[in-house]
Length: 117
Length: 114
Image 1 (tube, each protein chain N blue to C red):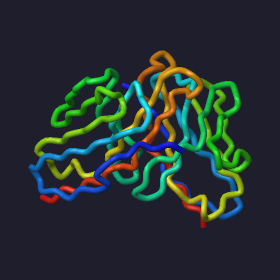
Image 2 (spheres, each protein chain N blue to C red; image 1 turned 30 degrees about the vertical axis):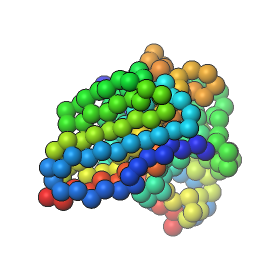
Image 3 (cartoon, rainbow over the protein chains, first blue to last red; image 1 turned 30 degrees about the horizontal axis):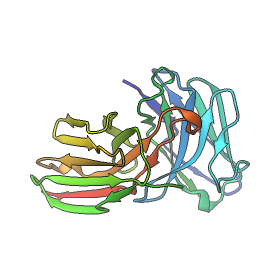
């Protein structure tokens, strides 16, 4: 099956520090990965589309300098929350689509619970 | 951004009852997906629909892709306690400049009482 692994699952950090979240496709190659943010009992909000070897495409209202995305290989994308503030506390989820099955469904990571104190 | 209209927003049912939820869109999608999300976890794919009119089953789950390509429903038969969670519909169109971005419904929170 298509497995997407996200790490860490939970992280607590102090205000002003940066946090990196990794998203890996374990058994397939993904030219495109997506990063979402989710508030409690709400739907997933797309933050950005991560493209291997090129700059990420951010959704309107998402700060590029705040949420740095790097997609350096076909199996890894990272999201770095820079200078974190308590309002950045949220559940962050990534998804990836199989490069060879581009017209099929995306698979999600387990999510990362970020708490900024 | 655009969202699909998913209803109901929440359901409280007794174990053994059947459940039905649906999604509608103002625009066409060529693929519809249904996901379930448990607390603190990422969404897990339940059913994928690729053809208008398609009816697909996965165990106690049945989903249909509407003929107009603007709607889909998900039915759960004989619900059990582990069906508890949030169910999301999602639509996408492969190719083009959208990179196959998913458009999500607001979610249906399902509670099953034993």
